[in-house]
Length: 294
Image (spheres, rainbow, N blue to C red):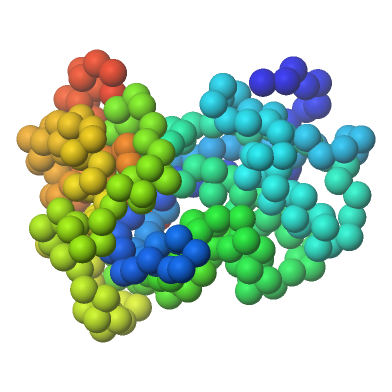
């Protein structure tokens, strides 16, 4: 990361949460190659931290993670550039991105960073854009960005642009395991065959349409991810992580997004901390206990 001399002002700080997919069902594939989906997404209390410093000569992004680019391919950079283009202001500020969310884990860190940039800049400049405008900007950056702008648990459909608030998730805790390697989202989708999915708990789009925004979510029966079977065949570590969580009394377990992270759900803080203590003994895994942000 670039060594910067500016003082980190807490008023110019934004916390950028991770997310988990409580279910993810692939519903089709468009002519442009993008898959359509229905997913229940929920943010969790695992955060990257963004620090903003204004008055710089130009827009710059710095990050403490070696795999995160600091150029115009960084989603936070693209979000800042997009906001300023729409707002009509000079790009005179810097962003330091302190990564806590594992990269390439299916936890949405990059998309969350982009959404956080849009949300912070909108607040900083006096809310020139409404929520619908911000979500539209986010959709142009990535399929998960609108969800993070929405800032509530949501059923997400299409390519991420359709959002319905979901209020049926109880107070739960997630224990997230990152195995120490990332998985390419594009590779998993490329290998996914809609007609031969290995998911045993098929979620039909019709049943999802029957959910009301307060319909209770039962993690014992509703956790499903159509991409998990594809990823688990390539990466057996996913199965080992799931088994470890089950052995430590998780209510249920699932891979999030296109992997590589796996999470187990627990009913209370004491249960998740006990499992965390046991699993910290597993070498090569990074373990995160986090509350679901409902």
